[in-house]
Image (cartoon, rainbow, N blue to C red):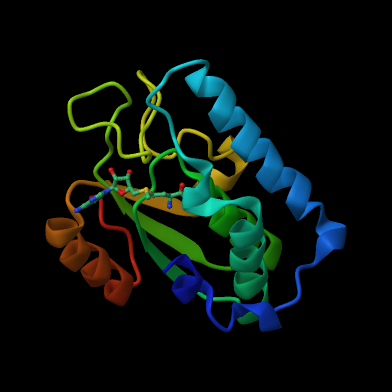
Length: 157
Ligand SMILES: C[S@@+](CC[C@H](N)C(=O)[O-])C[C@H]1O[C@@H](n2cnc3c(N)ncnc32)[C@H](O)[C@@H]1O
């Protein structure tokens, strides 16, 4: 099932020289450390290093102006996308997330935040200028995201 998301992406070469593998592994380590020995914790298979590399390579190749992502959680994929946009020196990321905290009654999904953290907490500060987060259910938030993208401007007055 998982392969389906990445079908055809192998054709994009990963620019290894940019240290992107170390960057992604560092994000995964930081997330893992934040959970400590909690039983309910983020499952890194949601975006492993290999898929992170493919995602980065795709965005470096395509150089999109706008990326829309639903499902941020700790911010692993968001941090990879934002790194690619920064290296492209072009593009913005709009993300939607309705986060779940580890240990809560909705938890135990493997897609959880450590207690006290907010969606995308692992994203490095210097990459946040290209990012906008919509907190809420994708079903309700997505129309606003697309309205904003189409308008090409800023949503918040
Ligand atoms: C699999 S995780 C995302 C993984 C993330 N892309 C990464 O790279 O680690 C899914 C996220 O989507 C959130 N989510 C699930 N259903 C949602 C919905 N209907 N609207 C918004 N967010 C939702 C979950 O709480 C979780 O934060």
